[in-house]
Image (cartoon, rainbow, N blue to C red; front, side, top):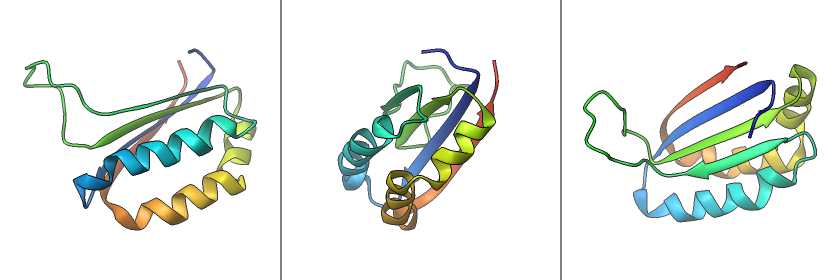
Length: 100
């Protein structure tokens, strides 16, 4: 999984019972957006390291070939629908974009 642009979203949901549903919704939508070159979604893993943050419920990484592809993804109906459905259910989030 390597592409020039990485989009990382860490989400803490208001209701932990919704974690499987948000994960399933992300799995159904994000990999099917044409601009997405790589996608992975999962939950925190506690291996006992004090300096590793686990204060989120779901981690999502989406990869793109270019900034233009990323911008098109942001406007894609599947992404927009996912955001409309789930952002109101977030307690907090941390989003970063970087290039390797």
